[in-house]
Image 1 (spheres, helix red, strand yellow):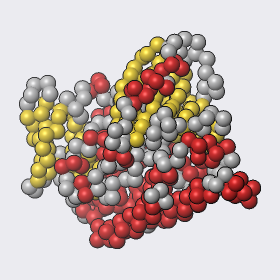
Image 2: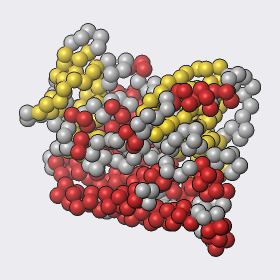
Image 3: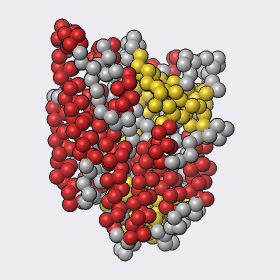
Image 4: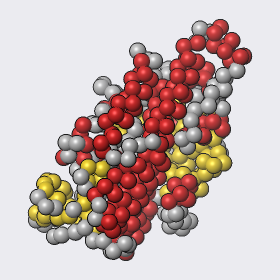
Length: 444
């Protein structure tokens, strides 16, 4: 069967891209391993910022449909729980019903003209004049070939197509760049929660190395609770950590749903485009490196990719696809790169450093929001703070913070000035890697 575009994965990014391309009149085949009824049913924190919908002009979640609760902000707790940062205002967002939200996006894509092939497992990728995807129908076991000049990989962390393309695999996702998560949605007996319109994040490197614990209220007495840990060699099982540190707090509640997963928390893949194949969403590593949220950034990548593909069909110029790289990198990509540098610092701080840093407000609450939105890291290092850290012999922490803030500014400039062609990519990559090398040296 011949199509203009084959999209692998009908999740958030895949559905959004399929809709955008289909509504322009192009034929899209949308393949997914799941049954249609289960698309959108994914283990997730279920939170998304309002700004993503505003920027992309996408209808936000609606009450009585896919909206569970409006979010006013986030509370971030130090390991000793003595200090709390409250980040609100512009951080307003939503807790969504992930399944209903996913079904809504899927139906919008189908209404626009995309053709869904659910229960299909992708087996091979090959190319003659067109790309050929061979997939097996899991219901009747039939093998089907799909042909198209353009392929989109929106298959999530699995990166089904990405892993079949040697060019993309020159930038493999390393284990330490992945968070392993476990979460449960529970119904509380009393329904009483402190500040229920705020999401709660608990930092604690001794309990959840390289990650955090979250308590995300979902309204009507429900709560999404979970944790993630860095996937280093020998890492603890996140479900075991959950049962040890989170479950006792909510043991009187009733479990509604439970599950685990993996999330890439790093900068985007060097290039999201290779000769007619485009990566979007988790397959492109578009997840926020600090909090692991990927719904909004996945939609961002999908819209930019769809725009580039439509431009390619209109001009018949393959170079138009490269504009996806440029658009994403200048937008969410530069925020991601900055936060990835900040991640390298956070994952190496011990609980004592985190407690001191938050207590002395080395980063002010309003600057936490700015940093999360890609506006750089502003440090609050007064003479009083300098004297305090000198007295406790923590000057090295201040120096690291300064250098990380500088590295974040440098990498932002590089991503804003992402290369306009493949020929310029290698020199640019060397400059980016230099910043990573200098940052990692701070912790040797």
